[in-house]
Image 1 (cartoon, rainbow, N blue to C red):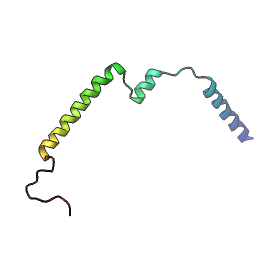
Image 2: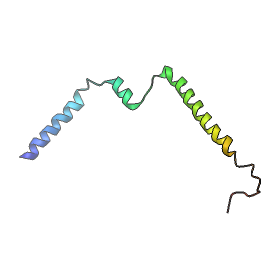
Image 3: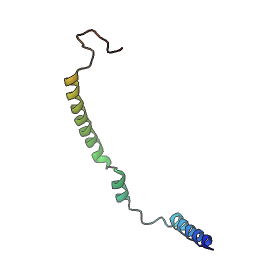
Image 4: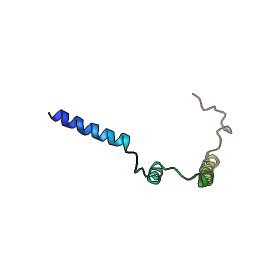
Length: 77
């Protein structure tokens, strides 16, 4: 008899989820998913790209491209 009671509860919950769609907080969902407004998206994307490009430009300055080796080795063994 316990199975019937558990199944009835599952059916009840499934019906509530299927037919009662109200109460969705879209702002909370947007925050949780990390979605930003389109108006600020392009500016933020450009800023983060510039920051990333600057960081890797420092690495490129430190290590070079690898094509200008003075010892004549190709790096392969």
